[in-house]
Image (cartoon, rainbow, N blue to C red):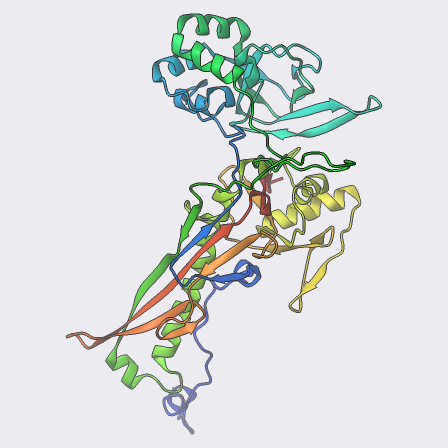
Length: 456
């Protein structure tokens, strides 16, 4: 027997009550530190040109490989990345050179070349990491850096120049290299007249004077007495400076007028829809500034500013190497898992770096340079990622963000939401747009620590 209800039930009462509710929440909102930290340059013309001093090609690019099973071979046109072969486009000769490379495997700790031995072979690193080890002024061992996939050694052997290795090279991980011996080089130059002519011209041509950054030298006189004839000089510029066009991220937001008219109390439906759409656009903007193939920072770091970790996880030594390659390092940018991996390495060594406070938020720091988290930096399927370190601002020849402000119906700097009208289905449409890009003013403004393992 059911008991007679004596009062109004709560389920029925709710039909007459107004609930207390939150605005729509969104899990995808992140701190977006990169957007907050980059100094933004106003690009009223839609294109930003970066003028630099003339820089000579140093020829330290990357070589690509292909494999069939465990057999690895170099892509013939990629051999033009070697300085002696730069500008050489004879496909037949390059294919002949590529076929002469032999594959060798080295276990961790094995020596590939020894300091003081004659440079008689070209070495291409197909897979793995190697360490260059030299001798200091008093005979102590010195670490000269780590090289990884795509790098090469001994390219001057192609010119037949007499020389010795200035350092030893040892495998840090299981390593696969392709080696071209001096004997094969001699046979190739004897069989191919175009190759021999190109290498002879390369060996005879004097290198243009340049500074340590590869820029065309400016002749100066210093420390002289009397009235000597002073050298004449001029500052040469790049003839084809790079231009960055503003990229766009857009979407069309649609809201039915019935929803906007009848269900906008106590919260305006159109305002909430626009708010969440703007957040999504800003998240995509930060993603593109890092990952876009054309202007993304991960793809535009100079090859000479890319270094690999010594052992896998990011160590204090690796972070020191990254900081030492530029002046006025403003901040690191790393995936949260990479920051955690760096913290573990510091703890393992008994090092406890002090943090710093930025905009009221306490973040980890190294050598006084804050480390900001960014989950837009990808982690590969093998558990590796990258850590960026940068100098920012036009006055410091650093990294800058590019945008255009003052747009019609602008809701945030460089982001507009424009009314597009109502269609024949009574749907209101809004066009949300943001224009952006990023530029690295000089190569050493941005450095990347690659092959950072976060899975250990």
